[in-house]
Image (cartoon, rainbow over all chains, first blue to last red; front, side):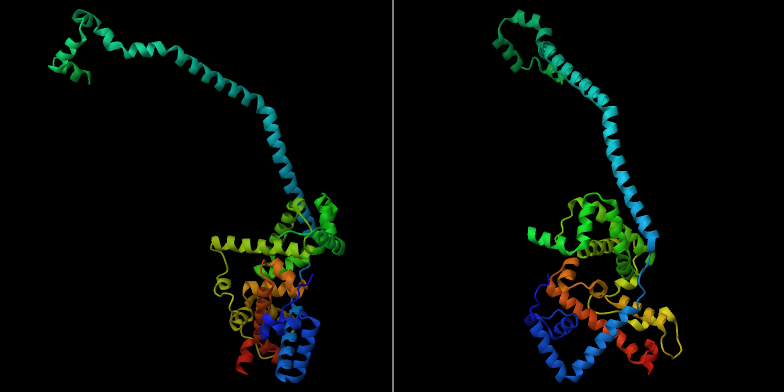
Length: 167
Length: 216
């Protein structure tokens, strides 16, 4: 599990702490032991670090006991029950209202079909509306019988008022 | 990162808590309860030092175990169980802190410093105890002093230190739990232990309160 610590990447402080934490390999640890033997200041620092480390044992430990276990297991059970409820509610909704949703879709489809058919059936009426002005003036057009003559009259401005009125 | 079958098998073989968690994955409620019993005090202990509030730590611990249960179907034993659990605990604690910060209820003292160095213990010790007469610290006072020293550390140093000390985690496990490199972990722990030593040394020398040590 332990990844070998590359001692060459370490600063002196990191190597020192790695030594304390037992993270140096055997050879590096032996070299560090030798340094300790020669360096009184390093030994002093080592003692200080160990004292500080040991003082952490003074911290009170948590001891919550059965109450915490029970409430935690209950919390998880409630959470699971909620999830099951949500899932069953979802399924129940589909079971109860599935026919309603299906009905609504059928009605919508019917309406859309009706609109489509109606628009096809109404197409001749749209043509009548489009031709309304021609139909209204059909008698005049028949009386003239010459479209070029009518265009000449239009160029003379004979229909100008009607056009303005028509706007 | 791909995890080999042999690696998974190794953890399953060596770590009894991994085997329990695999039972939890198969919806074994008793196995889950056993895991809660085994880890509740350890998780609460670490979270208490991270949040500084015992009640909040218990709430967060429950959140941690809830997440463990919810994640059971996706669980693969690619690390020691404790490493996986404390990764979740660390994330839950970080989320809680962010959430608190968003609500502007975060402890301003915790935000007043970064990862470069510890807070002034002198000030905290005074806050905790008032002006104490010169005398040796008794056990309760020592515990309080150590608690203050731990709280004086920047948060990531504190997490690394707690995992190293109380969970006996290797650098590799701490790196995995805190989602950082092993090299960064070495550096972080080095600073953490040096800061701890620097904070506590005056009190270890004479067994006195910070103000007394400073005056003497």
